[in-house]
Image (cartoon, rainbow, N blue to C red; front, top):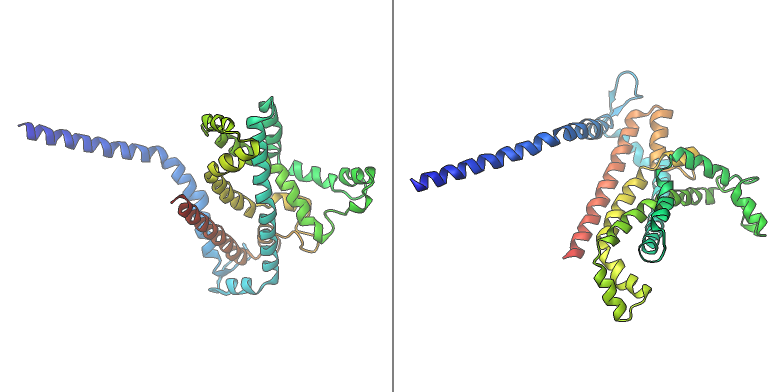
Amino acid sequence: MEVAITNTNKSIAGLKKKRNRFTGLFFSLPLLIFVSVFTFFGIFYNIYIGFFEWSGIGDKAFIGLDNYVSLLKDPNFYDALGHTFHFLIVTIPLSMALGLVLAVLLNGVWAASGLFKSIFFLPHVIAVVTIGTTFSGIYEPNFGLLNTLLRWVGAQSLTHTWLSEPSMALNAIAAVYIFANAGFYMLIYYTSLLNIDQEIFEASKIDGANVMKQFRHIIFPMLSGTHVTLLILGIIFALKVFDLVWIMTEGGPGGATELISTYLFRESLLKYRTGYSGSVSVVLLLIAFGYTAFQLRVYNKLRR
């Protein structure tokens, strides 16, 4: 009798577990539907149209892998890819470094940290159109604020036509991107710093560790997970940068600031090569997936 009761209780417990599992699934079902419709459908549709010659209007003509062959032979694609990697290499390390320094200062040095957090984070929530338009005016060669200040301090030789010189334009946009996003990195680092046990810092002070030694031996190593997370997010975000570049230069001068995102937009909506742009987006997606998988693998090895 007792065995039968025990088995009955186990069956009831198992049914409750299954019911709870399905309850969680029902709660997450709206999000799954949303992601499936607006994300996965778009991915698979781009893969599909990459096999067609199509202007976005009218009938599609199946051409197999011809779009990918054309893509691999297009020098403009390689230029855009090179500019994108240059943009990543410049913006991500500097954004992370600046965000980390600001977070450390806010955590241990500056008073009124709440006020400064708001000030530093503000550019991240301002509309990109506003930031791009504002800095286009700042970079204006004749009456812009930057060149005016350089002339005022006697540094005439440092003035440039910032957005019109091919050698300067991409770095000028990268500086604006860093300004706009450093606050995001700062906030993530600051939150991670709050999770570090403060007794570790107190013990290090007793042992005679100054701020630099604390940063080198405590803060930086203990934020390794945050470094990896921000690196992955930073690369994914930077690969999608479009609006800032388009507002400031539209990919010019002479294609010097053409990124993969602007190249994709130009081929799709300005040249009506929708099928070809589908193949470009697939390549961009593979690059993002490949890098993310590589970074996660490296991170998992470091944790072991």
